Length: 301
Image 1 (cartoon, rainbow, N blue to C red):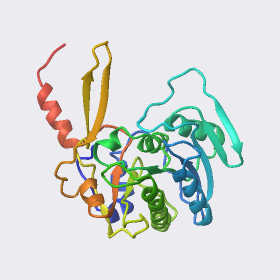
Image 2: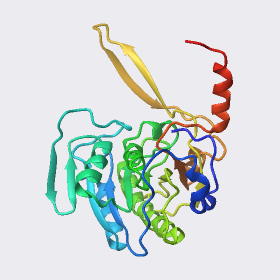
Image 3: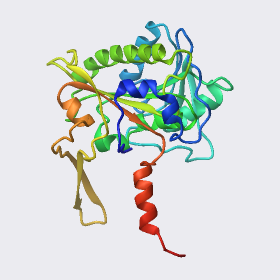
């Protein structure tokens, strides 16, 4: 999801009325409680992946009431895909845990309709993901897709990811999930404090948070926090080789280009936490609307 304009994070958290007119047509934002939150926790790595289990432990330890509603299997790269079959298998392997045989979007849809039926959670947290969701990766991310599904239903959402812009190392990435979730707790506390009996986030706006892997062991502290936008580069470059039998071998390599100033790639590369506002639709703003109107002026069917 490409964002054409980014507000400073402080302004984003304070200007709900100003942004309400540009948000999609969704239910009115829930009023944030003064105390701990009821959180629906999802991901795209699967309900038993290290990132979501660590998130469950850390958010619960912070006092929040957390329920996992996440894919039964790894659904990385499924983006916003959902509702692709006439039936869905759901397992309830333990208290506070629901495993949905579908995408992150399916999981969130089921969670809101059934697990939280009639009483939506205060917040949906998707992640923390194993690896980054910056630049073009965010557009196709199941982690981000889970957050988008929540936003479409009018529920505030945060997508969390842990990783740099290179292929993630298993050990250091899992280690870096600790600092990622420490920051997530601080961010949620900030949102709750700023809400002042209002919504945690402006209507129709979510946050895509990318935490870098810092230090040789991944346990280091990020050098700062930056309000960013989604860098327009793709990051991954596919290559197709004809096998001669009607099939093609597909390989993918990281194709890192100069980072856009103020973008998420620049921030994560500099060991800063990237926090990018996102919306659940593809609207690009009034300027592009005017350009499109001028482009089609006079055209007839």
